Length: 53
Image 1 (cartoon, helix red, strand yellow):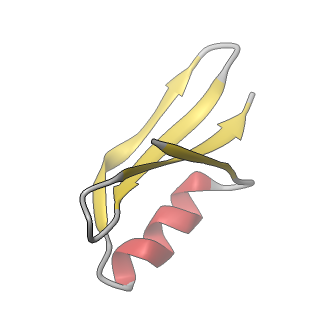
Image 2 (cartoon, rainbow, N blue to C red):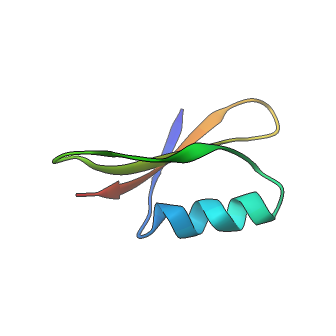
């Protein structure tokens, strides 16, 4: 899995979703770690978006 650090995962996932990307559900937050969201590329690889705590 590839992971990218982002400032606003909700906004980035929204942009990806509106462009037709396969976005997995909602973001999740883990205390002390940050917020995460995921998208799957056309080849089936999962990409993680991470906003540090």
